[in-house]
Length: 219
Image (cartoon, rainbow, N blue to C red; front, side):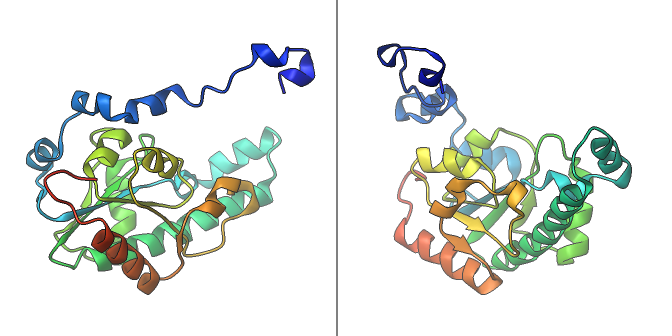
């Protein structure tokens, strides 16, 4: 783009995303370690941590918000499709993750997006999955980066948190209970392993955890 607008080739450089530099091992000591987080959040550091950064913002938008966006020129059909997808996908994902959390050796951490009310998402999860097991946690505190460092595997939908986790060299998995609308799809999603059923999610998660057994430190 820059070169097509007159910038010389020797004046353009690929730098990547500066924030991703924080995943370099030399910076990890700046963030709380797994044991600190476990004590603060009531988690078992000896269990395997499955981190699910929620990325379904459209699920919580009401009709008035969609109409407001439509009035600004956004296609209402696309908006409704995005909301329907997010509600269906979050509901199924909650149910599948709750099933995994029944295992005695796993902690599931669902982190809501900053803009999503914790009570609202807990209510949504309860309606979709029923009573969740003790090893299923909805925790909004700490940053995505801190959870990625501490966790053993990162599972999400179309969240760029999966890219961050890959930079941190953590196992990643894309959960996909239903087809992603074209308006929410990113090309990079095609390069991430996908689980499209509860059984596939359990196989993939337990398989990755078995391949990456934690010793004294998380991956």
